Image (cartoon, rainbow, N blue to C red):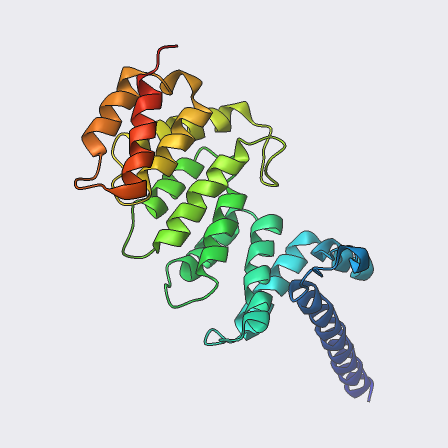
Length: 250
């Protein structure tokens, strides 16, 4: 009899635990699905998973696992923009609240070009590695792979790196001189060989983060060597302007 009552108690506890988790998942899903209002007068504070951590007294690790569950339950074939936000935001939050242990999980999403959360997964990976020396190899694998990653995703990866060095102009800015130096060197590297992405964008990133590069012989040589053949109209004008800028003396 005692054994039977104990079994019932365990079952009831498990059921209660399940109910609490479903309630927590529901709250977290609502946070992920939140879209800020365009009406600034009616704007409300943007919710975050911190609200769930406080309300349910759970750890960050628990929230990360809940975010993964939300991603798992979402439909990868979803076409509605507002419904897609749920999965995309959950993936981005994994990048904000997770650690390097989440990278293998994110990699399954970021390497699937059929997943509408692919770009979010790339952003999440960059966020996790924002203070790591592994960031640059990670980013290089993305921006040089035009088979797995679209032009837009590769450009967004470069923008994320630029934002880490843009104090007062980017939400992703990091106060990390060593990492910023790695990023600055990375753009000089790309400016010497990049031919697939918008070259003038890479050129601007290189000289913005490396003032010495702007009027250097190295920049002049790169611009001359990598100038696309047959440029006309506005593209030619912009390239001419970049070359003229590089030719100026300090």
